Image (cartoon, rainbow, N blue to C red):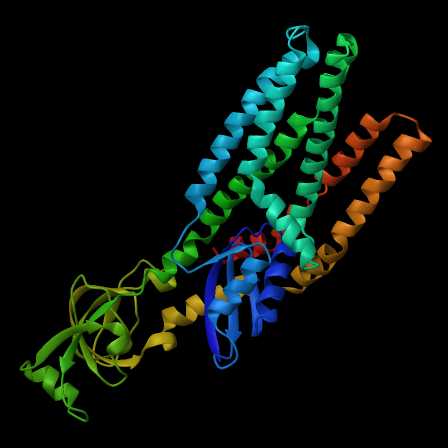
Length: 410
């Protein structure tokens, strides 16, 4: 059984994480766990039955972007966000004067075409919402993207229909009717929905990055190299260390085995857990314990990976390597705390699974009430229905629990 973690871009709520987990399991993964805060997917799979490429391919088909650890898509998202905000400002700069003044009385068609063009570019920039929304419906795991796509898409299509009406009215010489109809355009709503959601997503990303930085810093504490004493198996390490006549070699810490001896000089970071067999000094262990006072080390004392030898000289017999060191155990505990789902998170997932159908049903009911029972007119009825869809995006439902967990471990 192989254990791997990959990054997944595009997850925004608990329904997204549920979709990714289902996609991974459908590709043959035995277990799949999404960390919504770190944007990662952790899988356990049998290499004889599937591969990480197949799992990533399945996740991609579900509408998300898996990529190997180390890569970052934030810069591209930021550029798209800035462009989207700029276009939205340009749209609103014309929309509001036209809506609430007589500034564009004689320019009904140019203003209508201008709004259409700007809104089209905004939706193209934010097309990922529509792509993921469509794919999530196909995979029968509708999420927040469906609500965003419907709210923005319905506004856009409705505005196109009104735009055609405006052009027809102008062609027929009905300038007054055309002007009134042009004020009912919803291109600004179609553009504002994805842009505002993207702004919120960007702010959430900044908060999550800051919160998870402690975990990454903890992982970066691991030294990469150690100075190993070259000795034959079964040799008297204490005698060799005391004699001082020995050869050393700088190697990767992954190559050091339990029972081998390493040397640490003043100012160096201790690369692995072990027991002092020769020398003396004081070590700073604040990285692990938080205690700033130096700890004296002498033969028989234990030393720990990622702590610093402040003074002295030590020869240490390695007792723990790899995932068995104290630091590795700490990292494992913190990682498991962020990856594992508390009961409240599982409850949120169950609620999210039925959230979208309920919201869409409420939107239809809202439209019917305002259109047929109240008689407010189609424009107002469709506007209220769109409002129900857009304000119901369950970001808080999906992010509250992982944010609380990460804030605690960070």
